[in-house]
Image 1 (cartoon, rainbow, N blue to C red):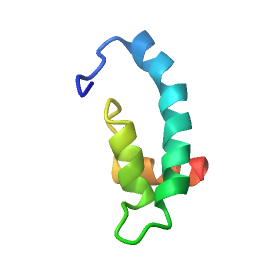
Image 2: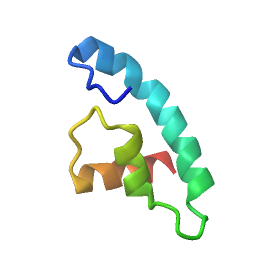
Image 3: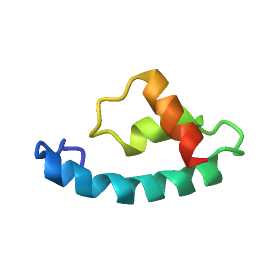
Length: 64
């Protein structure tokens, strides 16, 4: 599961599904004491994309 998809078309098919999962995770974990921040959640669920901190923060804000 941790293997990075190298095919761009395969990554493109994964992004919508992982975004849906990430949106739910942000909602569920945001209010938990000691839980990860939204940026960490985005990085965890979108490990196959090389995101900078600024990009991950922008994605997290968009998915809230």
